[in-house]
Image (tube, rainbow, N blue to C red; front, top):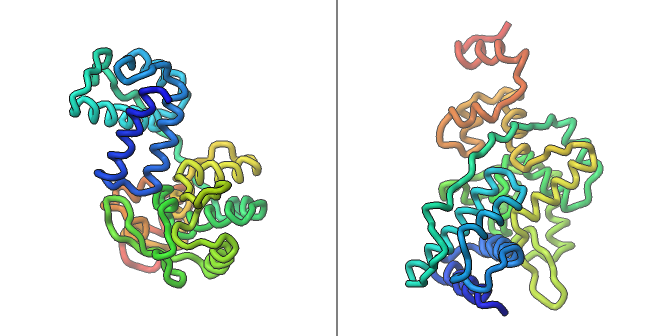
Length: 284
């Protein structure tokens, strides 16, 4: 084992035991650093340089947001060792800067398009996609779901900003989720992966994203991103008549301006919405 591997193991142990990061977050962090160690030629952190990190980032071919997430991960790790007194002579943290992010094109799907995809799904794909569309989950919220969060069709969980939220799945989704729990022998996290001779591990949000992306890709939707299902959820409830204030609560947003960015394709419905919800009179 290279020295840099042992050093990063020390950092990961600190993340787990001192920072008390969740198992899902830890698994995601471990996956990232396995990839990082495979791509960077340094034998120890003392050999690591800004140029190596720049090459790693440049060769990644990731979106701007993913690139910046990885840059923050690397800098957090390096700060940990600098505070411990490690002499990282070839590292200047101030020169490791985030890249400019190109705003992702907002994508959403109609119920008919989602039903088309669901008709071609296996059980896990179906559950992930349907729950996101039923409930408006963020991908990390979906990944963190446990048995203790489920009560009938209600799902109570801690969302963004550590706020307690609740949402509701359809009866069909609950029935199929029960079958999944029984078939897979689920006892804690809902989405697990089994390794030969090892305990089941919770799947990462990246793993769940890839599973859903595959289902959409098979049906010709090559620009899928999990957050598109949250936009789809928001658009559908507004087209079904939910005022923006109600949509804000259902999405767990802090302010209504954020909610407005989630609503798409209301052409032909705006006059009705303004009359009904702005002026409080019946639409003509």
